[in-house]
Length: 120
Image (cartoon, rainbow, N blue to C red):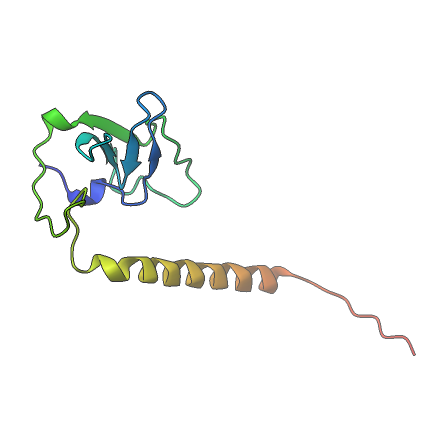
């Protein structure tokens, strides 16, 4: 049994070997059937600045035939399950990124030294 947070909802792209789409860590075929799941090796493996390419360095690829993944589908084209709280996640993440940038900016400003020369 694995924690659902190991499916990174920001892990998207195309598998270069199969040309299948990867949407929120789920590789799907042309009929939107799951082919594989990309599970994070560690729950905290998604760190800002870490390379997120599709070579599998941060993820383990599990064939869909080997995974029993249950979720309540609320949409006919839904690929994976998600909580009702997911609608606010992106806004909260953007707010967190904004706050991180503010702190970074203030740190840079606090270490800056400047000299003003006023000549009359």
